[in-house]
Image 1: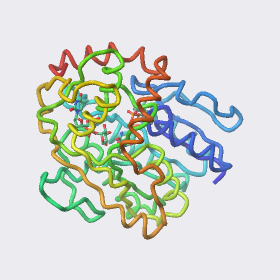
Image 2: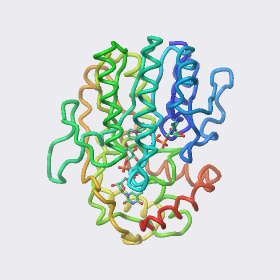
Image 3: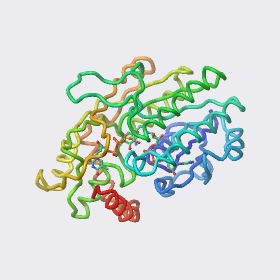
Length: 333
Ligand code: NAD
Ligand code: TDX
């Protein structure tokens, strides 16, 4: 593949993937990003200009998408509205971007016969009970809970239908919770790290018993590139690195890094419909494509991430006040 288009390439995981592609392949990259509140141009700083083109545009813009898709060999689709809490307050952009945007891209790759990889989430499977030993597999039935996860589930189903009905050469991946550099301060881990840097008590939803399966964004990127280059067309691969932790455990690890007492946080009202537990069984990806996560140590990754937010305050500072004002308005501050 000479040129790969990355939608949402100025967001958290998309920008990480662009860095990964430029560092580990010879392919050029075209980023298509609408530069919503969640994007940052500086996340793409330092990359060679001759290998990277950045287009400020909407994946729902059929004319723009058509011309860009015609000029590339493959599309890796990260662009989405991605935050559950936002989706509970205004679902409209989620329906537009996650469903109509994916449809628009699918029509373009169908017309031009281009390879497509669709990036999705484990949240499409709903949640597991805290004491259930099961983990999600590629055969788990879809059962999404929130406007965010239901629009992601819908986008997955569109991709599957375009493979079957129109022979689009697509693969899909559903990944667990990512963390690492360049994650927006609205998300759990960066919100608490930046609160702690500011000397503000972290905010925990409910009792903090909800479990998430954490993976470093670099491992997500390497998995997506593996599937793009060696995955079987039409297949879905689950991506995870065996990082299950409840939220209170993550929070206590952060409090310890900052030298704070383990009860130095504020319980805030729980998220409505809050999914209890996500857990990924990634054996298919590992057995079939030989993928192995390089950063499975969550506690070491958290320490690195804290260091990154301490050293890169200019990257997040301008978003912090507005994000906390939004949480305040939603009663989660
Ligand atoms: P993010 O919110 O950090 O970034 C999303 C990017 O998409 C932003 O740069 C934004 O400007 C762009 N975008 C939004 N609407 C657009 C539109 N209409 N046209 C063009 N660009 C648009 O999200 P993220 O956390 O990096 O997630 C990226 C993808 O990975 C999403 O599809 C998400 O569902 C999936 N995913 C995320 C996680 C996670 O833990 N964050 C886990 C599994 C899967
Ligand atoms: O302040 C907070 N306090 C808190 O306890 C925030 C922002 C979150 N939480 C809890 C809610 C969740 O149980 O932390 C957990 C993680 O929350 P988020 O970072 O909002 O992530 P989540 O809702 O699990 O979804 C994330 O992972 C799957 C991404 O945002 C999705 O895009 C991805 O699909």
